[in-house]
Length: 345
Image 1 (cartoon, rainbow, N blue to C red):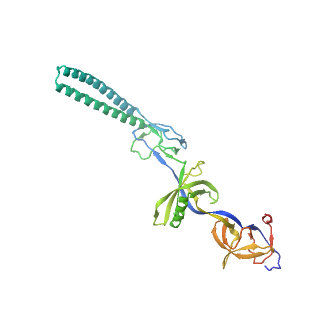
Image 2 (cartoon, rainbow, N blue to C red):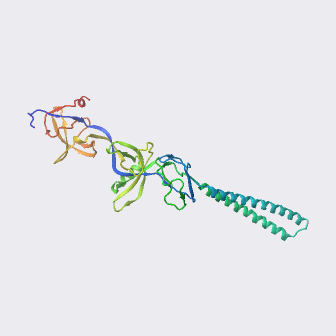
Image 3 (tube, rainbow, N blue to C red):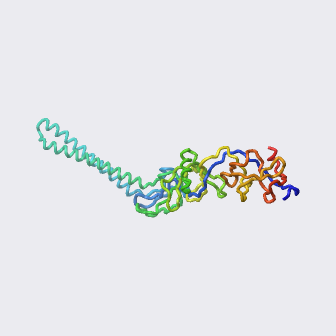
């Protein structure tokens, strides 16, 4: 429009100074910290399931019980065998003491004494073997009570009470998954590796899990591992981030958008992204002059996202930038501002 036509109605904003985060986005997969398939280590009939599906369980909580009758009998048999051998050993020690006295009085030969001493040592070894058999039987008996090895959440049971289970079964009884904390694994192009390593070394490599809108934050975590090699087929490197997951916002197997913090640009001049236009000669903005007119000004831009752009040159902090109505704008056009509260600041 010519300067004689009516003013262009528009909104304005002010170029401001802000600290701008330098980030990189990726798609990650949520992975449980630990996943354990609970299996039996002994054969027997499943007598009881001591958990509710979906229940949180603690380490050493009872998960299931196998019929212990056979293993209890083996344990008691081992205890009885030791008691028997201990009685025999006690009797042999009494005989050894008697032979010692007879040797002193020269009523017995050294051969008889040596034979009795060897018998005592043999019985002592047998008692030690009996104790080992008791320990083994006790361990096997304990296996009949199946406990959780981790803190986590029980899944859907894989077997019903009454079934005969064997130690070699691959199906298992239930899967326990540790949800707190939890991992997110994602990949980045190898070109980003140096910046990621620098951020990790500086302690600023925070990872944000984003919602479906790719903007709202649902969880915050820390970069914990950079893989030790680059995938040559894809030219990417795998990374792992650790989240506390206190509110269980992340779930194993879930695909999630993540944003990795790499750096912060301090005291940058920023304007909303829509205010920067592109033309044949590069990027430009319209600055509202004191004469109430739009003045086209070439700018050099830096980092940009969906909401704001960093202006490297061409605009000073505090200048009024036109933010809408570009279809009717031209250099020198008269402007009517409808969001005048920006100008009052």
